[in-house]
Length: 149
Image (cartoon, rainbow, N blue to C red):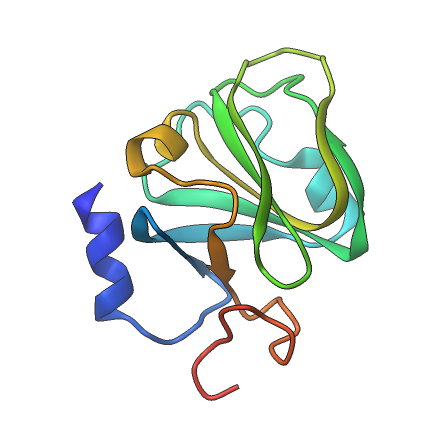
């Protein structure tokens, strides 16, 4: 996990394919696949047998809203970070169970959701209130804007 944290200091620029997190627990960077249309969000990480430790999928919605996820056809446990329009983690669901069809409620006001490997939230110590940096957030309102924005 030290590699995830070290990457943030080494690379300060925002990129569509990476997402930075910071909080009282420290910092981290994940390489992300972006799911920003209905088809991509519907497919998500279904049928994947593994995902690198420093990887994830970022679900981006057109407006902040109430969201719910399930794990049908998802083969690996996932942690889900529900993020508001300013780039703050407002809810976390840890260790979503593969194949479970129980709806995971992300709550209201969710603009983006980051799915990462199950157990990463605990390993890194990620908490509600963690700040997220990615170019998908409207930079003038972002709690952690991209450099040069």
